[in-house]
Length: 518
Image (cartoon, rainbow, N blue to C red; front, top):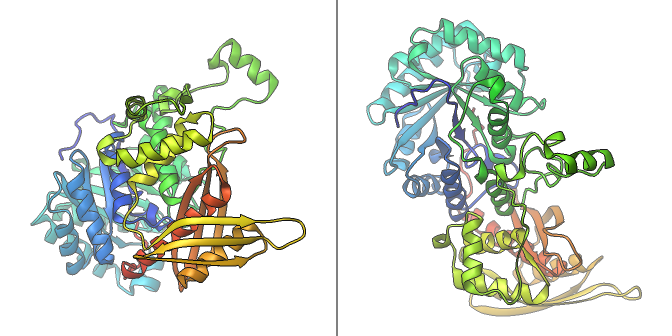
């Protein structure tokens, strides 16, 4: 894809499917990645980093499927400066409308000495060779100097100059460890852009981690100092403390155009649907006080604030909820609503009806509407997301009965479909959820460690649809699960089974290579 000639445009490079997926418990299967990729296309991000194709067959398949599924963004695979990595990456993106490759190698002395065991010249040679090799097959080549913020800046100039000569079109300056602060990071960009031979012919990019809570500030400062691409993730998920948050970067540029004099191509109204979708898929809930997309982002409780908002929303709101896709009309449907109204509301919420089994989704909607008086947008999103990301399950819940009193231990009786066979068992526990999970483990023969369990009411009221997310671990393989139901024990069972099904999937698609990357 050709570069935008408007130098005030900042390209958004989304790495949710690669760096974001490295967040503990955020691993996604192919169908889930496709769902996120299609939403990223609706957002109109410029670049999607779809994965690290050489790391495993599962990652290769995911990159290849995403490359075929979207038509507007550039689709990249990450690769080290090794021929097998590059060939695998190129093969994975070969069917993309706009294919590219993202090559990286570390440049800080600490990484050279303690990780790569390479000299500075050896790194220069490896980087220029890798870019030149890839250039024979693809035009869009991004090169990243891993741990750039802790690298000698004159050495960075040397490395970048060589990869430009070899054919790199985008140069990425990563703050891999979240070590930088805005003033010095901005100064680094100014120096590199002014000093690197050929630096005026390429796009400069910033990739920031959030270890000190400055990923967004560093990214925006880089843009103020010449970066015209920012690498980020939905909800800021990623390795350790996460990556720069896409929604915060985009809305900062959008809201403070007077200061930045920059813009992006992002359709801001698709931000909240993207955030909600990722949270549903990964089970990583969004903190209530998260800027832009948190439940409290547009809430006003203090009396003086409420009075000011009632008089004029501009008194306390610098953005309107609708600008990021948060509907002001939450109440949508009830048990008498028909299929047409259901489908129409899904379209208004940005759901692609071709991606959803409408018969199953409508059945679930009617069942939910029978159990609660009012069905809200959040309920609908939970229903269709769960339907869209399903894949053949080994374990399916058929029946669940739980009893509890202050005189006897909580007891659960569970009936599952395991493959083509129905099985049932029962167990006592410290609580109803514990009893339920123990019974399920007895049936499946899998007893993972439960590392995280969280409950969230999707909407208000005593009939709220409860959303449960959990993270399980067995033999070093983690899997997250989600379940939604008006009965929180049912939701808990669905989440646990969802995680067990994913665990089975991970066992055959476990990542063979782990390399953090930029």
